[in-house]
Length: 295
Image 1 (tube, one colour):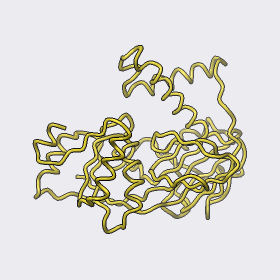
Image 2 (cartoon, rainbow, N blue to C red; image 1 turned 120 degrees about the vertical axis):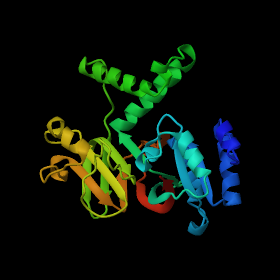
Image 3 (tube, rainbow, N blue to C red; image 1 turned 30 degrees about the vertical axis):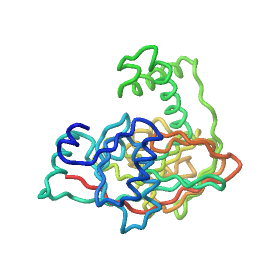
Image 4 (cartoon, rainbow, N blue to C red; image 1 turned 45 degrees about the vertical axis):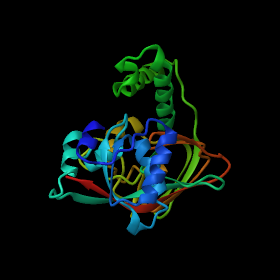
């Protein structure tokens, strides 16, 4: 923050949700040409949701610096490391930035506000993320150690959950759902993995989306009884699907512009927990495009 001020930037500190909301309101009102965000995915998600209502010509260029526990959006753009260096480049009027466009995704259910973001996890992944959140909350005050509160805490907790599952001391809930992906297909049953994103995940080890279909929205879902799941998991994680990894075998993956989900109760949207009514359908669709800067 001190570096940003020394470089002449106007700085908004947002230590809590209220100050974040106030800062975003000021950004929307002022309509600056460029906004630099140093925060996690939840901060980016809140800003994107507000900017989605702004006319596309009034949306600022966004430079996303990795400053949170999760930085999937910044990683996708290659701006998650060396924030000080990127900040200094942003202060150089002669530096020429590359620019990429990313669509948001919109989560919509009757009776709830539209929410914009870039990554949705549901089913088993949502269960694990929420467990990690509770784990950090329990230990934050009692044991303020990096193993319980830092970036490594999620890896540590997931390892614990895996061991407990192998020992038969931990089970996870069933998630009966149906996903209808426009132009891609449908999958119904007890769904284990449900992931949706508009991020590219280029050059990343984990990119679990098949290059099938068309559209800005990418999704992957697997049924609990998916054929040869563990044997095919390495292929799934790299997006290397073959013809036998289809809805008939319990796999649905690829691109579309809209997915309708029945039976969905909970999601994590960019790491933020949201609950939905199980008896009402949830639509996930490709949203507006935003301009992101990167070296």
